[in-house]
Structure formats: C-alpha cells, structure tokens
Length: 350
Ligand SMILES: NC(=O)c1ccc[n+]([C@@H]2O[C@H](COP(=O)([O-])OP(=O)(O)OC[C@H]3O[C@@H](n4cnc5c(N)ncnc54)[C@H](O)[C@@H]3O)[C@@H](O)[C@H]2O)c1
Image (cartoon, rainbow, N blue to C red; front, side):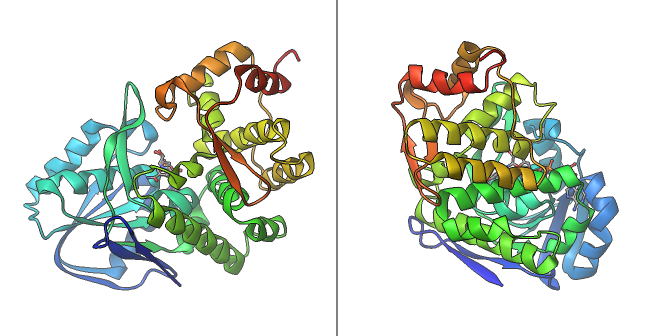
C-alpha cells in the first residue's frame, strides 16, 4: 500500500509512504539511525535485520518530549560529525513523533541538509507526525517554535511496531485519526464508528486513510498558508488544556480529544454543527477511551491563554470548526462573548 506525496508548490519533491511490513532496505551510503532506549530495546533488532548499509551507526537519545531541544539536536549533529557522515549520508528516524521531528530537523541542518527517512513507531507518528515534513524542537518560549519544513525521502509505516505501544499512547494516536475524519471525510467517520482497531486489517485501513488525507492536505499546502491549518482542529483548545495542566496530566492526543469536544460545542453554538453530530464525536472518542471532559476553572484565563498559541496571528484567534460532518470552516472573528459562553459550559461553576 503506497501513498504518493507530490508537493504542488515544489514539484521536485516527491516521496512514497509505504504502509506495510517493513521491507528490506539497502543503502549504498553511511546511515545513522536515531532512536531512544524504549524503542531500541523493543524493536532495534528487527530494524537491523531489515537494513543493509555501507556503514551503520545507532544514536540513542533520551526518551521524552522534554528532550526535544536544540541541545539534543546538537548531540545528534556531533554524532554525525564523529561518524564522518558526508552529504550523501542518510539519517533514519526510528521512534515516535519526538524522534521524527528532531531527526528531520537535524537532517535539515547537517551540512545544509542531508537525506532522512521516517520509520515511525507510534500511532500518532504513523498517522500524522511522520507525514508532511514539519520538523523541529521546543524552546522555553513554546513548543515546536524552532524548526524547518524538510521532507523525508521516504516513510515506512509498519503497524506491527504498534503492538508494544502502551494503551494510552495508542488512544492518543486515535484522536488524530478522529480529527482527520471529522474535518475531511464523513464516510471515514462512519467507518470509525464501527471499527475495531485491534484488528490488524482494520487498523491498517484506518492508518492508510489518515495518511492519504494528510498527504492530500500537505500536497496542497506544504507551509501551512491555508488548508494545512485545518489539522489544528481541536488543538487551539487542546493546547490551553495542556498548558493549564503543565503538560503532565494529558498526552497531547488526549488534550486534542478534549479540544475537539470544545471546538464542537462552539460549532454547535454557531449552528455550523448539529448537537447530534457533536455527541457522535464525543461517543467515538470515548469508545477509544479518550478523555472528553475538562473543568475550566477560570473562563477568562482560559480565553487569554488562546493568545499564547503561535497560531493566534495578529491577536485574533483562528478557530478550526466542523461545518457539518467531514467539512471544516476556519473562522477568525468570533465574538469573545460567544466563545466565553461556550467555555462556561465547561466551567467549574456554570
Ligand atoms: N511533525 C508533525 O507534523 C507533527 C505532528 C503531530 C505531532 N508532532 C510531534 O510529535 C510528538 C509526539 O509524538 P508521539 O506521540 O509519537 O510521542 P513520542 O515520540 O514521545 O512517543 C511516545 C512514547 O512512546 C514510546 N514508543 C515509541 N514507539 C513505541 C513502540 N512501538 N512501543 C512502545 N513504546 C513506544 C516513546 O519512546 C515515547 O515514550 C510531539 O513532539 C509533537 O509535537 C509532530
């Protein structure tokens, strides 16, 4: 199963996303695999059985979002120098979105850019982060504020790696799948309602559809000047939830699930979405054991937090809302009173 990427703005960039058992990969060049101890202890053996290269080195960096920093990127760069990588060498990102984002960014920097490929091992990275070439790191000023649009040469998605993924991490990936369905594809949403993602064949189909949709979006708008922003559905609210809970209570996908429920409530208030559909989305998220409830302690503070988001351009908040199931609307000028009225529905004291 192969999904092609063909960036319309930069015609020269095309690559395939293969969704299947990891094939044998042979490279006539030096390769550095970037991974972390969790992924390497579970899956490095399998990876090495599938790779043949002129020389191969493994760089293991600590596991966790808190290591997604320029410091870690510098560590990887230093390893590249130590192993004398040249401009023909290749980096392989082997792990979740954190590894993928950092390896891609390192590849964009080393000697002004060398090739990299993605072998994502979490559901979130298989359906979302590994596709589309956003790379980067976090800073004290916010998440993903430093980075580059830098496309991989190929993406190999092997759902078999997901067998070892903790339940919560799996569900966090499902949130991004639901996001794609609600925004772009009503029939995919219907499919998910009855889908048993524990079934290998059904899971593979779900991954394929998400990747197709993401590729379709990125092919139109690599640099997020338009439709790519729709992938932030649920994120505007979700980021505030993550921020208010110090990034410790919820995984990103869990916060996005709560964020989608909030965005839907706003869409219902604006009569873009009917209450029945909003309920269906909530039920679907709950079916996959995602959180859908959140108590906002202070509505004014919650509202102010929207402006910390780097996507809140020119002091106006860009809301991504469902406009019927499978359709979206981007709205930047919603009256503060209406937004706060909806937030109050989630308030501690209604
Ligand atoms: N570039 C993009 O377009 C994009 C899109 C969405 C998210 N992201 C980024 O992705 C990151 C989140 O990615 P994530 O959810 O994959 O988190 P992650 O990379 O931190 O992985 C989650 C956890 O699962 C572990 N893990 C990975 N594969 C495993 C496996 N097969 N079995 C068991 N454990 C495994 C990891 O070691 C980690 O502890 C964030 O930094 C986010 O900013 C990027």
